[in-house]
Length: 265
Image 1 (cartoon, helix red, strand yellow):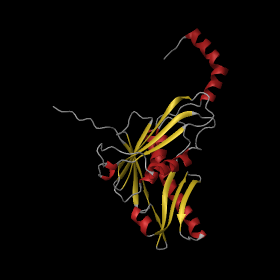
Image 2 (image 1 turned 135 degrees about the horizontal axis):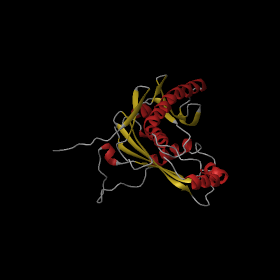
Image 3 (image 1 turned 135 degrees about the vertical axis):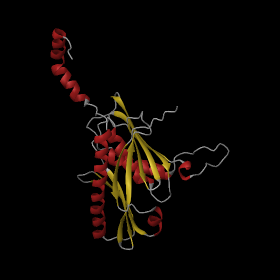
Image 4 (image 1 turned 60 degrees about the vertical axis):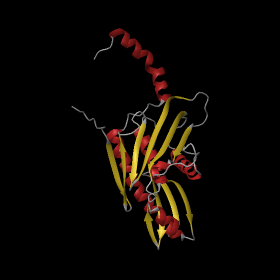
């Protein structure tokens, strides 16, 4: 007799442009505070978020670390050389990590100095869908699922200008060969938080139209992440400053009362 236990997975998806982006949690990296696999086409990214419950002593900054782990096996290749090992991060991986850091770093409580790590690992790359957009959305989704006090979500899309038409999340080849605009936009439901672009004499009106189009699609991604959080999210940590204040104000009274009557179910 054989018994097969299938992991309990939760999924949410959003149709962005011509493609569907799917968020799945519950299958991989279940010991992380938050973990999600983001998929679009045949490109898949595992994003994990992990935080320390205690604040770093003496820290006057937010110790957030973002890493993007590109793997040659994702494209079906084996590293060259005698040892067949992965090398140091590529320039693209470093820039993608910085691009993830910028929009999520401001969305934390004031004075929060707990260590937080966000790691995005490329599991599969079809060489058609750009993984940087998946990393951005995956990082936000992983933080939303975690107990960390992240005040997201954020969504990210890429906009290209091909033959006079704005295209959402175009194929890599289209961006490299046919597009006059490579625009990455990140934002929340309320507004845009980061813009990164390269363009070839694109009119200002077209750029503004692209930003408005991007925000409409970003709202879909934010809603998908909220849906995933409602289904599988963990309870958020309490604000330590607020908890300490309540303990100082009411802790003694509560302890005295418990001592008098004991604990009851």
